[in-house]
Length: 164
Image (cartoon, rainbow, N blue to C red; front, side, top):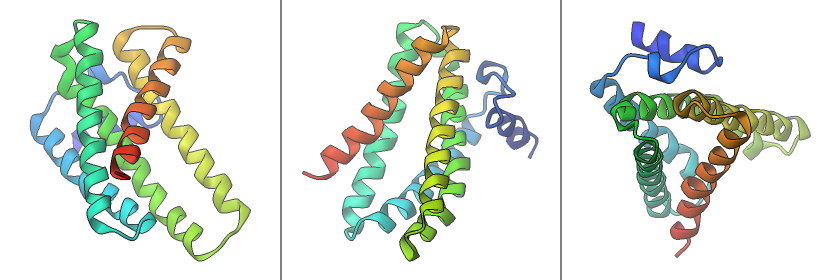
């Protein structure tokens, strides 16, 4: 529980991923949780459960690969477990917040639900930017650019390949 509290500080931009505990078991739990919650979100948006499963697997593989390549180029591969756990944990926390909004969007068409969704997406983008900035010790513009690349590689690529 102490590890969860430490990683939760990251969601409030209050922690550096490199200062967080390194735990392969916590990473495995985050991967499992990620798969379950993301599958639920994907299955809610598509009619095909196999397509949803395929897209979630691709998203996870692209996430793990993107983090690995990013850390390899910066010679910080030693922090792979911490950074991967940080990104997946933040994704999982926000995914929990996305669930009621997705349901709200499904049952109604109120503008407030779209505004809430936009706020969560911007928060997610800011979190990934924060993790990359703190990990690589780069400026805000560079970390924002890498975050945009991350979202493009992970989500748009998985979506495009899932449509095939």
